Image (tube, rainbow, N blue to C red; front, side, top):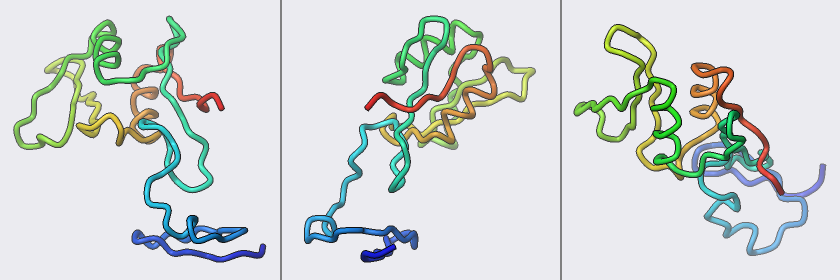
Length: 126
């Protein structure tokens, strides 16, 4: 592989095959909010299967989770998180970043695992 390896502030290296000045100055990821942003990663979206609906906001997600019995959990110790739980007797908890733009595939898969037949993570349409 030929090109230039660049190390980001987080210590992760990425290969730039045909380097230009602009490629070194790129600061914002080229993917839309709520998708994978790692270099070379395919963007992902969360899909509510019964309606085949791509979830594009927390309002949509909260509506769908509410239909499945999840309620919003207000945790004053963690104002940076949006949390949902099934019931007071249940240990199931979904924790998400307060900003939908920071929703990562890790968070999406957490929702899928706890609601297997209702949600799916898919590659976003090109």
